[in-house]
Image (cartoon, rainbow, N blue to C red; front, side, top):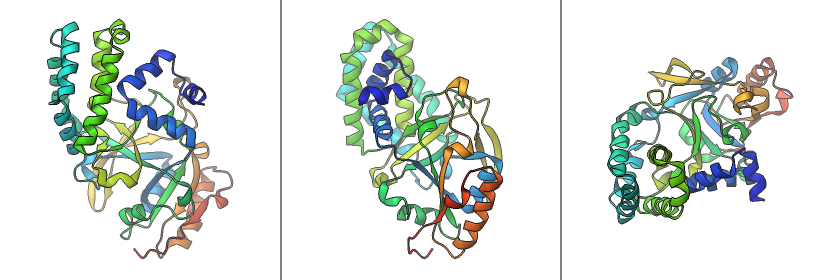
Length: 328
């Protein structure tokens, strides 16, 4: 079963081993997502949804505008705590013993990029859809995106988000909901993996280890949230233009809640020769769930028409109204 799921990732045996060593949490969540086949859901306002469908793109917003006021800061604090641990000192002993100055270089590199990560990280938030949410959505999400915004939920096939590809220069990662103590446990597992597989990694060279530990620390900062948010079950598509500029994401400015914001747009298009496919609207889209509100019936009619204009087959059967009896 595991082998069949791994094959869907189109990774070599060496790449899978590398994934398991440096990113064990993400590896396990990815295998779980491939196994359950749960779709992903993107909650947003009906105005944002209309723009995304009409323009064939998905918005990425700066994390500084997100509902979680501790975005980036919580992950940064957790990592800083872990880097002062006994496990970090043991890892440094092994790495510096083979590659003198390695740890100082790695930590300095991470610290130099943190200001960029804090200000120039753009994300699209997705959540795993559970079976009992198919007709009603998730109550906490309707509350978070409600408040007069006439919220909707895009239900999407997960395949394009899970398959590895460099086509967009933006990457999907699961969010880990961890306290500093829980984060340390995850960090200790990475340290154990690196030390236990050091002969294999040594053969791949210093720069390989450096790049992967930096990436592991980078995503730990970006994709660790306070455990109080655990019910979000979030995955995020991450783009950092000052770190790696994309040739396909489109910058734009929009006004959200009367505040002008810079966004990036993910074009709903396939790049099959770079492993990115199933991303056109007709292929990606499964259903639109309209949240509770006084305009639900009208919105259903308009979204059906809009989806038909974008050549989504059987659009009339793919737009539903949530049965959550919530007054927003």
